[in-house]
Image 1 (tube, one colour):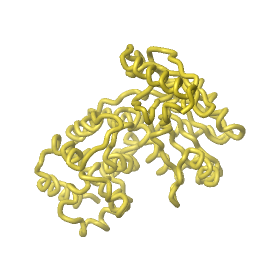
Image 2 (cartoon, helix red, strand yellow; image 1 turned 135 degrees about the vertical axis):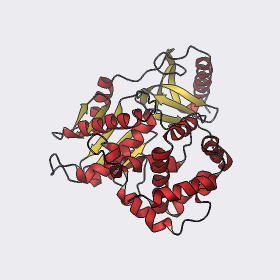
Image 3 (cartoon, rainbow, N blue to C red; image 1 turned 90 degrees about the vertical axis):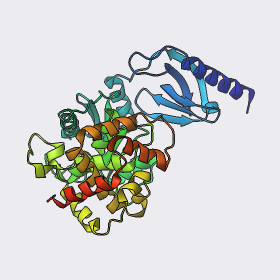
Image 4 (tube, rainbow, N blue to C red; image 1 turned 60 degrees about the vertical axis):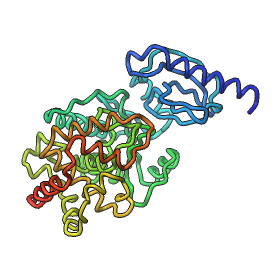
Length: 363
């Protein structure tokens, strides 16, 4: 390491240590704001974790940066507090990033970058956010206001979407048409209608709802963005929200409207072959999503739906417990199971019996 790089590295580490003992942020609990140069870009952010090997820095646009300390240049401390960029600043940054052919529309909680003239996208995302808050609030969940404006990128075509994902560092499996990135805190998708269907967004609806649910859950205190969350919880909640009686509960009020018919059909295919102890296996690890994704998604949906319908208070307590997991840690199988049994009890066999009866009644 050169002398100059070593000096910068020592300065960064010293600054991080200083911030760790400084005043806590007024806007967002944290360790103050740093400004530095990283690979030619100026970044303002707050350090969440650091070591001699790497720094994890949350920038003012909500992105998480992971870099080696010696990669940072021109480091300085700019504030004892940390806050998001104003929406107007992030809007200008998005326009500069995406260039011609896009415009950025702001709503109460969202900044949506979309093809020029297709302004309806922003209100769709905002409506989903408000319906999400309504659904959980009336069931006793205490949600937080997002710390950052929520960003969604709507690409014109699948080709543009794949190119954007590659720049985002993602290699997408075949068939993926949208995603939420915990690293950038953005939703990205493409318009499957090519902009030709005007106000009809039914072809895009499931993707928007699923990914916007991930984003909203990670930004309102239902999921912990920087701590390991069981995948069945994360995907189960998102698939649960795809049902019309969940994402639009004011317009779809029947109990049956809260059932995700597609996931129920998948669950029925695997129901007779579910092994004994399926719940314990799901709690212990996420391996089921690699071994049999369709079964894992339907199982995650079924349990999330059951717990929300029959055990909403305990479900809320369970999500709150998961929110207490320390950032950037690993979770053992025993710890994952303990998180669940601490709330729902250790008699998993009895709970599975209740679950099985409930699911047999769903139509």
